[in-house]
Length: 156
Image (tube, rainbow, N blue to C red; front, side, top):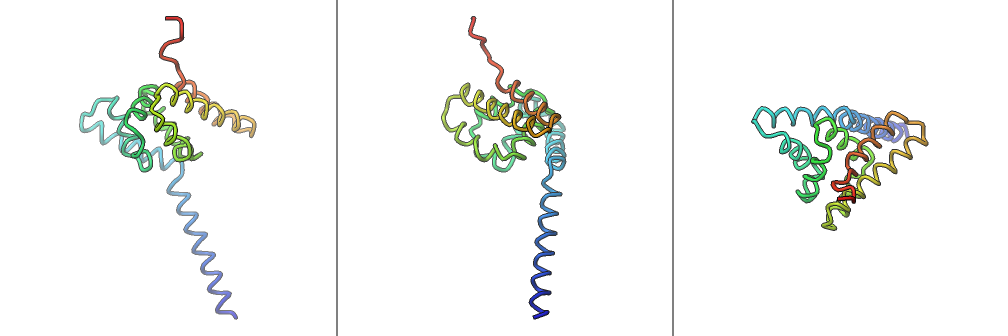
């Protein structure tokens, strides 16, 4: 009986350590650091800024399957490495990169896709605000504004 309890305890301990390491190495800070290192490599090779920002998304795990036009539209609206990194961190942290982006990108309507991404982020920002996470809510809402910016405000 003691052998089984020891085995169960060891399994629980190992599982706990595994989860702890997984969280530690997939934290938002680690994601940001990884993206900054990748950006620096692209910079050293003399790749233009717009292409560097695109490559940050296009070479990232689950983002590789998204259409290039969708990723290019995102980076053109975010237009700084800080915004792109914040966008990736938020998208991955709340899993909207996997749950929503593939279907939005597949529709083939770039402006509508960007507006839907902006609405998703704005909704997330509102939810975070209701939960009292004001700093993160503000960040998410600013990203929503940048992505949702209209290229033509309807008057011209």
